[in-house]
Image (cartoon, rainbow, N blue to C red; front, side, top):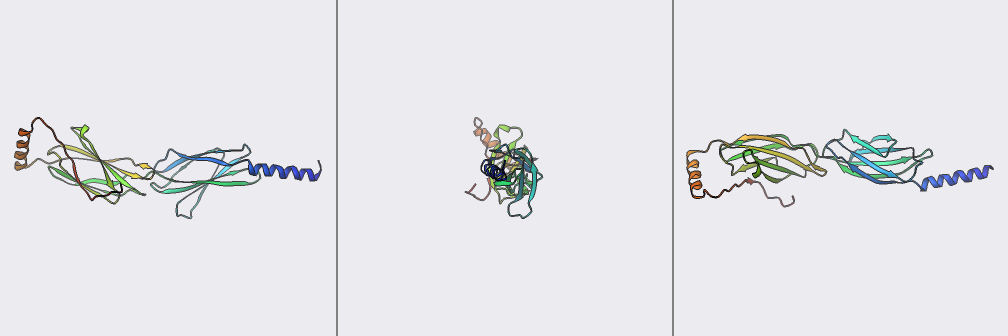
Length: 231
């Protein structure tokens, strides 16, 4: 083989490598509040590994991994925030082009969820916003003795309190609160309580209603909140 033909074949092989591999179907799965899996396909068997970089959107701190398979588990991430992930194929001769995606982690659960005031007919709930970006909250109100009458209520992400009225006296309740993020719903946090005994006047009023409407049953939950149309 002449030096010229050797150069020609080497050049042809390099052109083939540059045009015959590509990162395809970059996909995210199993997203949690601390990480997610990224998988992909490649069009060439000549790739020997992959360079994966990822960083928090808006951050200049870039983390880097080298893997041999078409799958990586990114973990130890912050909850409820968006990351940029890039994958580059590596051959013995050079590094290829980059394929990228953006993905949020699941938002963390609301914090410090508790009752601050309970009467015979009402309860006030408060909480602290979770780490990361919540786009809404989901509140589930469960009468312990009648779980089939549970109610789900969507709340604005700007709220950290809810006033529940229309409850029954001396009854156990459980409220469960979830944060809704860009990547799904967080785990729930719960708080139980028992409403107080009704006053004499309220007991008389309730007895009168029961005697005239003994054949019907009406349960209503009232939550006094500002009106938000963008949920």
